[in-house]
Image (cartoon, rainbow, N blue to C red; front, side, top):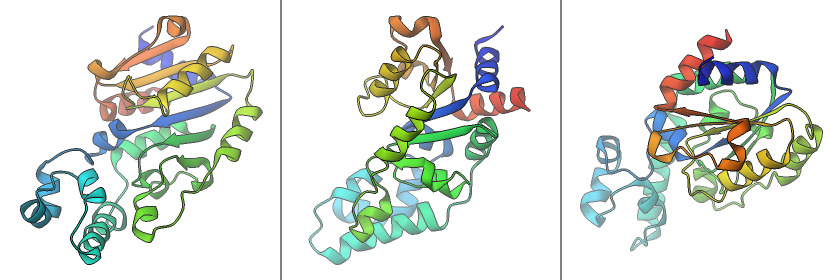
Length: 227
């Protein structure tokens, strides 16, 4: 049985899925907050030329000379990345992979694409907030209680921990997920990432599945196996 077949089997037999998602998932969709790419230059070329801003994350936290300039950047970001967003094939495939399973999602992505693609907002915890939090200057919605309730519900059950595009040195989401995988006797840890960032510690090797490569391709293959 291949690794992706093992992953599909684990998801089929799971009582629930705990999903962790970071920048790699957004990149698979074509949205890259750290890139000075064609999309950034098309959407924010005037800011790049005027201020030397080279990516979305710089633009969000740049010290603009006026509040109007800052607000224009943020308003444009919300317009292009949220209001004009249409669910990508990546998100459609992820929805199919989750299927009818109960789930909870922890993400550091601020684009709200998960909710916009059909995931339940009550089961998505943006731990660093969203672009709209920044634009409207409103506090991050803390869903720690919901996350803990989910974990309590599936303690000692067949929990699949599905990690999407989280860097190997990430301590905000990856480290807690690895620790949870180690402590839960029936957990299966499945991680999707490009080869340089795919990491499974030795103590989890016996209960882990690493799926290397483009997340968009891998999710499509998983979906086909689960149909």
